[in-house]
Length: 155
Image (cartoon, rainbow, N blue to C red; front, side, top):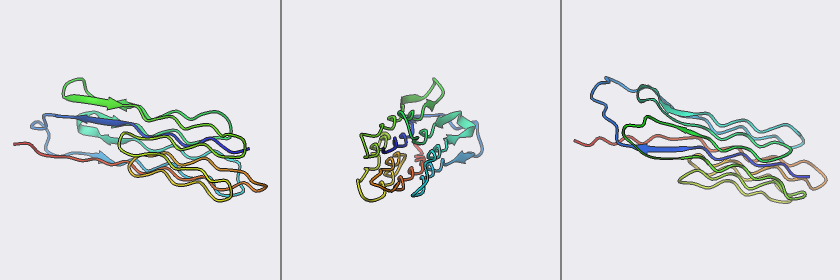
């Protein structure tokens, strides 16, 4: 039996007034860890990408597991200035021996599973890794992709 895939991370976009801050504390979330071949454990959760000083957060997706589907990352953003925010796509459950397809993020897609090799990593930025497949041996899953931040100044 294959395993479910990792979920995609959230996305937040907006125009924010930064005139009151002198610097920005930014944290880039790491992609969730893969499950190594031969192991039946769960994949790691993706880390949150945040701009702390503005209260903006794009949550990382949940790691894949041996049963069920994993939840997509959730956004957190101030109501003033936020144009839109998107929840990451949940990871898909396995189909027989084939692992699930990784959950997509706003601007990328998740990793693809394979029958006789390890699952693909999630695509940058924020895609969930493919679930591990099983064909007489447990294959490795894909790892999740890291988050990212783009900052543009408008004058």
